Length: 161
Length: 227
Image 1: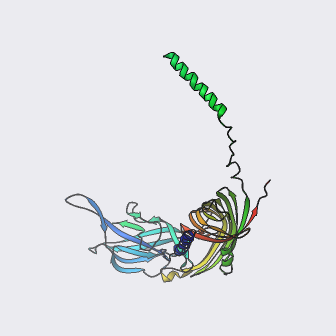
Image 2 (image 1 turned 90 degrees about the vertical axis):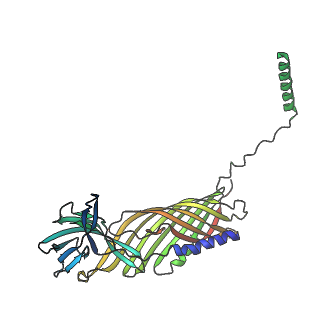
Image 3 (image 1 turned 90 degrees about the horizontal axis):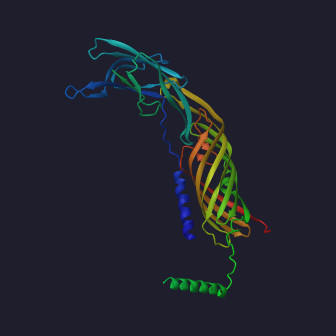
């Protein structure tokens, strides 16, 4: 009987640790876009996808009057969404590497939301999900949604140039 | 040869007939299992831990337990209510609902004269509840400001499975004390909208699986009268 009681005591003590909630908040209000390029190896003729740094003269976000980004050379951008709206549009004004040509692209996303209580100490957070492209100047094969959930450190869209 | 065989057969039959005459009449076999699955009493209990927790403003609840013995097996039913009102880091969460668990325990102290128990068992739990949350979040871009949310799930239903173990110890005649440890798993909640279910009465945090639960119970036993 003593052994049984000790066993149960161990379960009780151990279980109090198991029920301690984790305070890890992965929700974010940003969409991460990666710019990619398909390269063909001249000798092996194998195709590979590599990061492609773009020269962005400016990036505009619907609902923000000023430029969100300006004169930046980058292969990834993290752009905000407006939690009060159901859609967001980004305008990317980019320049060719030679500087000879410029082009304005736009991409409009829609998303839905879900509230989640993480833990009493952490609080509740809105998670944005079901990310979709509703309108864009990019061709259909030029972009790929890699994650429909807006989570920290997660790429949502890959755009190919 | 055939005569010898016939003779041996005749002798052996004769011996068997003689043996049957000599053998003492066997006692009629008593069927010792015919009544052992008849319940001998009903135990009614309350969960003291839930009542103690109810003194805290963030939790209100109660739970009653019923079990009856069928030889070494106990059929159990638990019925309870729980409501929480939790202050969050950025808001408040409330829920309330009822739950029922039913299942069976196997008693490993079968020969204990006091009907003490060390048991293992399983339960199937069903919960019906509602919940709501109010909170504020700040957007990653400061220009989009702080947003206030008020979300609720009016009518949710859920179910889960438990593996249980515990003790029942007789304190005085007709009164037992015990504890039950519950390993809860496979929670399923139906009927929710924009608020992801958080705390299911009877189960706990829905996103945590497995989830542990405990009861410290006080039982009163009412024996059935023998006819």
